[in-house]
Length: 543
Ligand SMILES: Cc1cc2nc3c(=O)[nH]c(=O)nc-3n(C[C@H](O)[C@H](O)[C@H](O)COP(=O)(O)OP(=O)(O)OC[C@H]3O[C@@H](n4cnc5c(N)ncnc54)[C@H](O)[C@@H]3O)c2cc1C
Image 1 (spheres, helix red, strand yellow):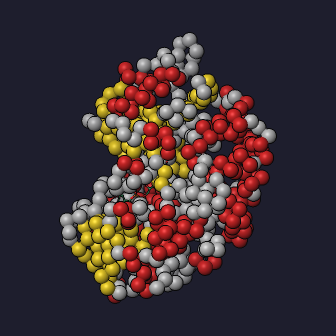
Image 2: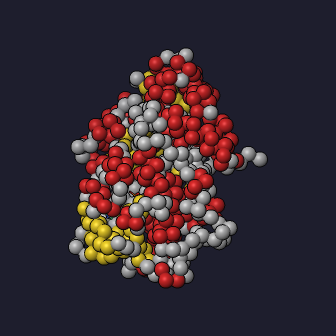
Image 3: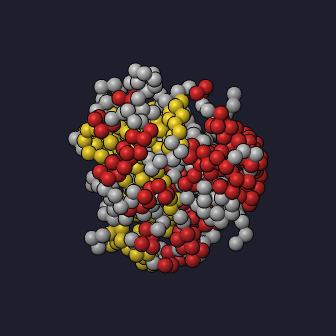
């Protein structure tokens, strides 16, 4: 039987899922270190997973959170309707994200297929480009243009990225083979953009500009990808090679529950919640080295505590904008990487509706009244969430990135909703969405939130070295002693920004690093990422 695609590498082919599942556990710290406090900045997914695993090891995590537990897994209930939520951050989770699902299963979350465009979970899809709409219910409805684009993309991946060989190696968890291919691709594509990949591919060159344009609008599964065109091609290759854009699930009741349930999850009568007396400590404002082996963490009310190890999981820009950080905490090379990190902007606008009226068919055309919609208009992606025939539904009127997200940045929720409804009216002239809206709209612009400053990393050409410095920072034996004890994790430290799985991987790296820092280690039968690091380290490009 063919093995499934998982997020095994390709940069650092470590089996996080096997490490997590092994009965020997992630490791232990010596008796003398038991109960030692570790500061964890950020109560998002990576912070809470790291804190949970450190607690399991017998250390005492102290989580600081400036806003709301969950971070970018933010499931906001509509006013007066606690069970109806808008997923403002992460909302679709690929089954290849096996470390993420380890925790989702641990806390008993239910999933359903995510209603992506052209997916079985969407009753129908409309692709609306340059005012021409394609209505698609079954694969046979796909117009030739879309088929040609899908075929060209598959061919381009073969031509430019040894794609099937890479995926075969990832499936088989064949480390030498996957590294051999990936290391070649790193050298070839780090400094070239996604757009360059598409435009220079023979498979696309034989087609028209229009094909490239439509490819940018429709993407290859989850929606428009032209906002990623300026990014390093490596970003895109990681997503497609590890199946992140396929077979995605939504979390019933909202993804934020993962963080909240883990926070309350009991281990031998102890939970993070009980350890903290109910709530995390306040946001951090100052981080400085106090002595050779202690880092001082000050919160917004001026309370300062000393820790032998600190894990920062907030977006790295916050280390220079909202937390006063001693410059000697990191090397200048690492500061360069943290500061050069580039974030994508992203905006979403949701309304609650009385019922999933899009399940009804138009009497004349027999088409569904409304569909999952991809468009070159302001809305870009419109998604329909059906909570059952007699339940209120949710429409994500618009999910957009970069320039499209910036267009609405200064606008109020009502202005955004009106703009989006206006755009959709052009696509569905006979559907009166306003008639179905109940409650207040919900909208977000992550770049406008001082606790985030952006949605997620989108590495630019030439950023591989920066990514590598951040990702490998948990291996601290090679660092000067004065820089040890400060750890990093989270979406922007990972190789797969914008995907929660990367936040989990980096949290687990930090757990290994902190365990090692306190003199602990793994069981020989269950080596961790640091134990195997020298064998599988991400390829180093010359500085
Ligand atoms: C719009 C959007 C769509 C996404 N879609 C998907 C998707 O479909 N699938 C998927 O898998 N992933 C998706 N992601 C990515 C996923 O949400 C992230 O990878 C994950 O939630 C990041 O977790 P984290 O712990 O690294 O960071 P965060 O969630 O950002 O956690 C960091 C925490 O630090 C806190 N903080 C900041 N400053 C301080 C301070 N000074 N003191 C204390 N705390 C502080 C913040 O409030 C935050 O809670 C999406 C993200 C966004 C924004």
